[in-house]
Length: 366
Ligand code: SF4
Ligand code: SF4
Image (cartoon, rainbow, N blue to C red; front, side, top):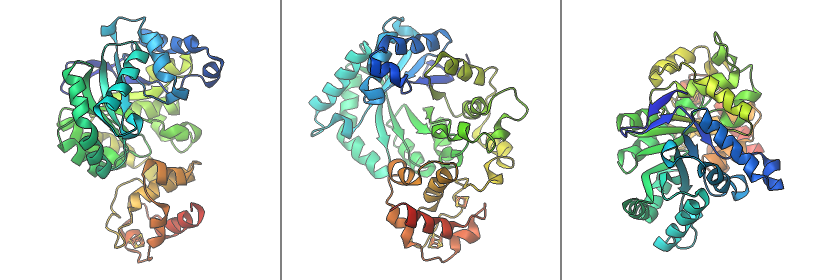
């Protein structure tokens, strides 16, 4: 296993982390939780020492399964992370609500403290401010009491918004979605976090299965290697100097082995260098938006890169409405405000038919 330092801390973490949200569904339904826990032990045996869980994952069993496994291991041989936010805390977000949620997580994980506790799933800067106002003081209190060691956040914000969040100097690290399809959207965010000495953990490195299910589109990632396309996509993320841990969900031991192979003899490079290397042979060759944001200044204030990112998902076979609403937290109706001025299309580095795509989104996603 290849190890990296978590931001400016002394923690040595595995370049691959286990995202504990892919335990076998059938085993969970049948109550075979111990069988699921074996995957955690196997991953640990292979050198993985970072385990990321949350309430509600896997029918709300993920923390329990993860705890069943981790409690068999020395406490100083792994790092465990979980998450909370206003929605998870519920009620009026009081100190008691927060504490109850945290204690449930600690009990389920069978630990006295969490190494990382996330302010979970912040979709926008507004939400970031609101959630920090409501909860940050409770995170600090829990840290002062030794119940959590590092306060971190997870987000789907775009690069420039991430830069602002990073600038608040409140968090030791962040968890974001980053992969060979969307890297341009968040690159400035990871660079800013790295400069600040924050750890950067990446979720969704295979773009929700889109990369493995479109091997031809992403074949360029594996060119000249003995890796499969999904392995090469993991390596693409893990090789960023700015990225500390690449999370991967495992259902089987083979999944663990695959991910470990992806970071064998890893060579780290700055994001800019990696992007230059891939830019001319990768998504730029396809009919996909690269997230470069040259089209940003729309007179109707339409966030074109985010809508085009959702259209990427559609091209590759995913649901674009879910992406617009669930991932980006935007209203579909904003796409209908396009007045076809053509400004964005004249600036688009990919020469995409943005007006037509916005129209299609308007018609198909209501
Ligand atoms: S064509 Fe539509 S989306 Fe593009 S800049 Fe004009 S109003 Fe905005
Ligand atoms: S300029 Fe084109 S490729 Fe770049 S973000 Fe805008 S739509 Fe996407």
